[in-house]
Length: 213
Image (cartoon, rainbow, N blue to C red):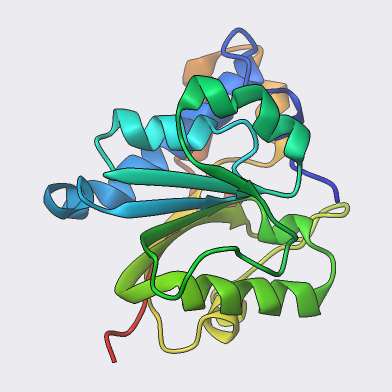
């Protein structure tokens, strides 16, 4: 499985490129969750492919979630951060989630589906996410738009096939790795300005809402 190059850089805030992508994702998540904040403080939250738990920490800083959980296929990453985060985490294969039906109000996935080359596994994971999400619950989706290298791009139609009946709202954000790298080391203002141009944006940020019945 190949993860996004920005993730492989470890999100080091001293690295201008990683800093841009981190800020871009944080802005997108904050904008998508702004209307839910009063209720979100009591949510049970699951991060699929949580890695070292950085996104869970961000959600906790935003006041999102009464209980936060993470799962990943990489047990080494979980072992490194489990104690420091003080959050329950589990090692899971891609297509199985070790949680009961309707366990979570919010499920987060950030550049996970694009890293799974097998379409059948992606479908199984989507079904598992639907199973453990409460009716009326939300999926926070952040992933690439276009297929590049070993990463699989997604459009609205594909999301609709993975999560039929879900309401969708969101937008494009981010920049391609090459363009962001060319600009970020010159100026954070310049790379942020480039992200304002819709045709250069590289990622989807969506809230998918499960039907209540």
